Length: 236
Figure 1 (spheres, rainbow, N blue to C red):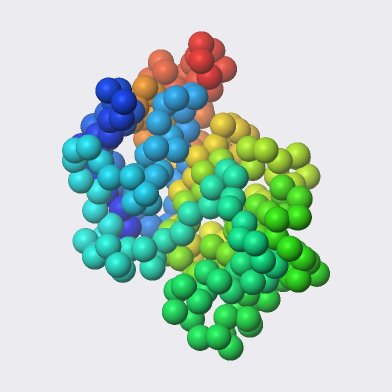
Figure 2: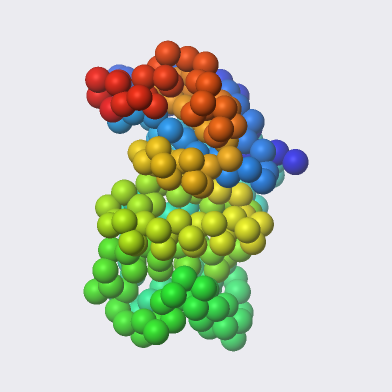
């Protein structure tokens, strides 16, 4: 079953076309990584898929379901997560309460995900005093607790050191192993190889290549993808 289908999706802002007639089907299961040089439109495309932005033209279909159901089936973690002015535990509980989870189940589920991401010992620490890596773990825990069918990750390790990056990657692998579809953007080609099953490659707002990760890196079809992999694009 297809969780997401894009049909001739275009998005323009400030007199500039940012996403240019993108059409593709994103299937359940494989981890999808969106790659492309700076300014290619990766984050905008992800926000369109998530519903934070509306296309200028074209259509995005979420399994043919209603808007209300769609928001219950997905979650998103940003490069710089927003932390509420409360404890780590309360941050997770807040999201669960908004989703209609009972009060008793909220705390049990929140503690379980904090344990899973290695933050249970910081459950009562104010979220905003946590380190960058800890905050990103908390953002993942907050999303994971909701049991989303699809999790969007926008550059989840962009500002982290190598150690924190490895920990975040391990959590992403665990979330996917639990049955959640992963759609993520990254600038890190090594990370795309490690975490991706398929690549969507954007260039100047256009989807120019879609391929399994091994094929994309070993036999790219387009000159733009070849240059990107080699680090030769002028504004990469």
